Amino acid sequence: MNWANRLTLGRLALTILFVLALSSVWTYGRSIALVLFGLAGISDYFDGEIARRYGTVTKFGKLMDPLVDKVMMAAAFICLVPLGAVPAWVATIVVARDFLITGLRLLASSEGAILPAEKLGKHKTSWQIVTVVFFLLLLSDARVTAGRQGRRLVANRLARWGQRFALDYDRPNDLFRTRVSLAPSRADLSRRGLGFDDS
Image 1 (cartoon, rainbow, N blue to C red):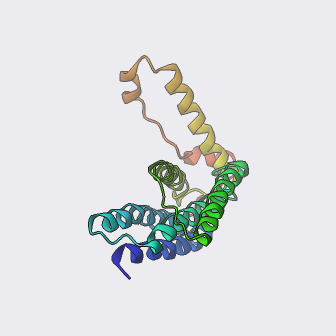
Image 2 (cartoon, helix red, strand yellow):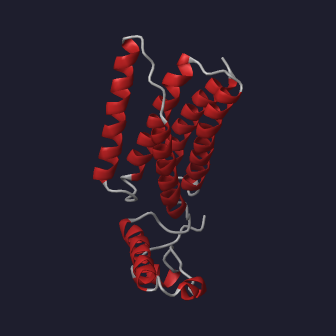
Image 3 (tube, rainbow, N blue to C red):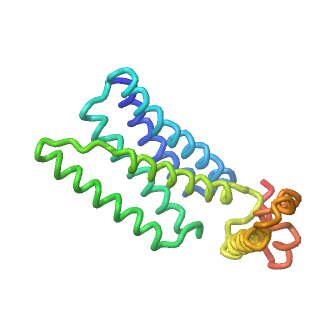
């Protein structure tokens, strides 16, 4: 087995560890999940690059690379739903689309044809990885208790920042002078009866 295929299987292992970390109740589980998902995303670039550069493209890699990508993204979006990061309908669309594409690839492979991932699909996966990393960055703040009210405060901060950006788009200097905090302050949480996990 060449190194490109090893990286592909390694990404599958990182996905399993990512799900375990994100689903754990450990204080720094989300931060560990962020690191694991970042490593998995980086490996998604390097396995294809190594295979093309050294001429080690195999049928196994053509089939497993996009399949592992879909497992990774489906696991990420499904795990983000109960945390309130993404709505369930978004995860449903992502997972349903990936399952349909995977079914077509398996059908083609049963006929002896291998459908490799196209550039458009790779760009789509890259943007999905960026989206998941963004939400993991918000969730990895171990100080705030992962309650529904705490997530609502973060969402409100994001909405206010977006409104300010939309209103002040013609004054870029004001944006650079504005300090925006995505995480709610201690005063905000104390007024709503939320605590901090200092352990």
